Amino acid sequence: MANPAPGSAVAVEISAERPRPCVGREAPVGPLARARFQVWIGAVLVTLLHVVLKAPGIGHAGLWLDEAVSVHFAQLRPAQLLSAVQHDTNPPLYYLLLTGWERLFGISESAVRWPSVLASALTGGVLYVMAHREGGRFVAWCSSALFLASAAIFALRIKRGRTR
Image 1 (tube, rainbow, N blue to C red):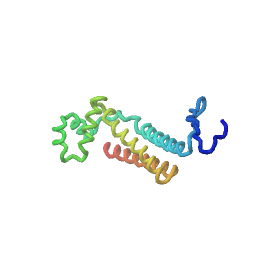
Image 2: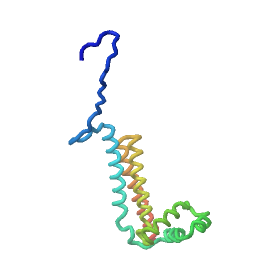
Image 3: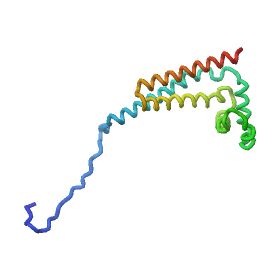
Image 4: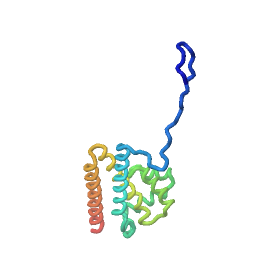
């Protein structure tokens, strides 16, 4: 196109080319996305470690009295449940969740104990994410290890106390 004369109207072509998607190669991943991915991988590993260490032998022993009471409360209708647990130490939501869990998986030693194992494992994963956000990877792994160790010691003390 020739140079336009001064004062004349010029038709300008605007190219509306869009960037082409990366075909045949990976989309670029920034360091921030990679760091977030690593944090979530760490949280998943901590959660799985909790399940792997707490699940073996979960259904070997019979139900203890407090577990049997929880099963009994979970079998009540919601209105009966709310009046029955007014002075109980566990909140009614626990029993309502246990009601749904029992309907899905039945009433057995292992089925009744799985919600607690999963809640503890998820707590470990959330702890890892929060500790990583506040103090970095080392703090996250140390706090997760301490949480797992304290849960293991607590479980051993409970077993010893119940067998005496």
